[in-house]
Length: 396
Image (cartoon, rainbow, N blue to C red; front, side, top):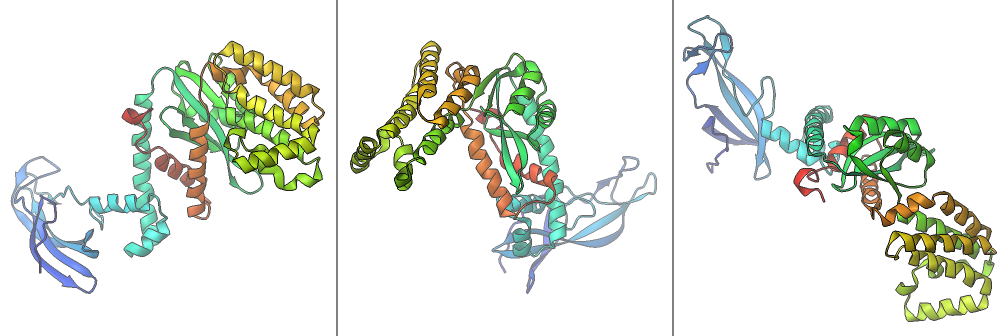
């Protein structure tokens, strides 16, 4: 049999065997002297020996079991009997510390059930191992994030559906670092206040908060961060206008198949699509007004400077109110109501793009496990998998 080094300096290999269940490696501690945990005196008087069976990292895809000969010493000073300590194996554990870490890494991006099946470990045992390590890592990561917090924080706040029946979770994210800071049940004002209060150490550190047009979030941010600048995500604003165009299209029954042609950006159309669009707008002159308003609003976000953007937005709102379509009139009223936070984008050009991408990852975490009954464990998973190495030095 090949002699393979274990990579555990404190242990020396005595014998190796290959069985049907995997490799059996008999080891013992290299040190022959141990310090008494009761009085602190060093002793080499062996009281007896016992064997522990622990599982270690696989070799050549074969399970490895260490049969550790553990010496028990009797202290010369206080006569107490104690077992030799091992750095690589915790007391009363059946796996090495590095195997615990390996199991945790396997569960990231997978399910506990899948890892349990592949590693031949009981589900409940692996579940206990994963969440015990996950809790420790979450505390470490939280401390790292709090230590790296600086003045001028930019936060993103958005909701994600976790169950059918309009059951939501509010997600808080550091927009610069791209890391999830926390989650809280539902999307009401009180929930948002609790989430922000738990995860933000200093209110003065928050410079900008990016939101959609959900009123309770704005109320919560204004209550906690009165001096922070609120920016409404531009994609949600553009979505309001494109939805208005789609509602206007539905008033013309023959245009059921022209939806994407009308909603797509003018510069992205192919030559044949552009010709088809020209024919539609020529045939339906009223619809050309709605299309023109949509393209005019897209140009609004290409504006340089706050003052010019303000003039363009006010002009667009005026034109939309004069249009023959109720959907555009409604959109104009909405944009007029949120005009100031919409224009804040031109002073603080941040969007919710990162948190929207993270929301997709959160949904994949939920689907992967076919949902979570324990929402605290779901939030823990999201925090660990959607924070990763984005804290500290990798913060954008």
